[in-house]
View: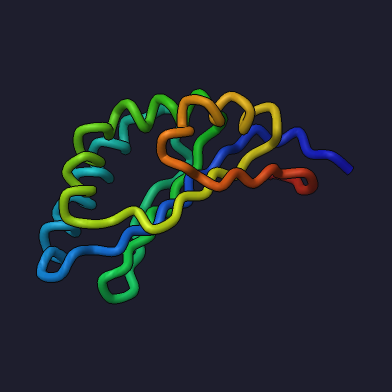
Length: 120
């Protein structure tokens, strides 16, 4: 059974530099505010385990992913001054993932192709 779902998720993990947790969390507030106006964003938020952070985010499709990355480009640049991107996964159906492979190549993500499932 194949899926008709076009949802794409970005799964980034950050290791926050020593002494920068409060500054990173301030940036998280700015990320959330900036992203809240994106029409194709389905959900967005940050979770923490000590000095490790994860951004939980989903978009209607690859177009939503690319629009988001353009929207938060400056904020991401600031975040990467005080943290390291330790892992980046992109999840979605092949038709959408294919549209992201080239534009996201410089970030070296691992791409996961959705093959089975449903969406309500």
